[in-house]
Length: 229
Image 1 (spheres, rainbow, N blue to C red):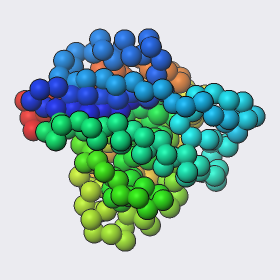
Image 2: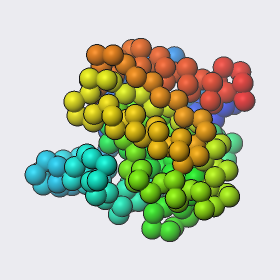
Image 3: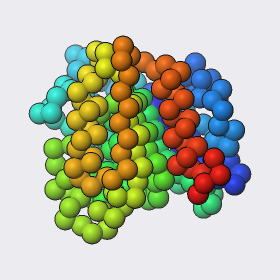
Image 4: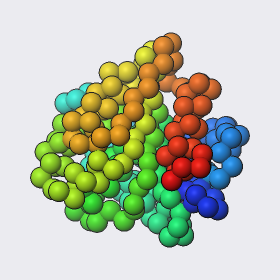
């Protein structure tokens, strides 16, 4: 998964989660010289969907379905861990979060925490996010998101201000395409006005150069790397 901290004037830092060392090299090779990439590793924990087998995971997953339970404690812990890492960046640095698969789920959950101004446990969310990117992932807590956002003027304002890019392969057999599509719909319904959803024919649960080109374009425009603000 990736996360991002970025300074328009000097350097940007992007944090990727749920990527391995080769993926880190891929990110470093992208034509985004003003971005600093940070690739944290998730802790090892039992994951229910894998029969309780311990593996690196940002939270527990029982099943990928609209009716499946969400591990709120795990989501809050991981979102807070990422926010704490990014909160050490200088004040003039633009901050964003992105990720792949489970990392994308944490990135999108962080977007909802930013909009609401707090984590699910009520603790204030400390970052001013400028953009979020999710590749081959899904939105935890999508069923109740709209009700949580619409009751607060400030939450609606922050949601409307945050650009989000979602990319998903139509042939993804790990996180099905319909979950990515539904995530985009749920975000839009909750008041996130700047949501872009890109689909890719024949793409499974991995990334391809065309998708990464889309990510580069998105960061360049949303972080002002192309000369815009």
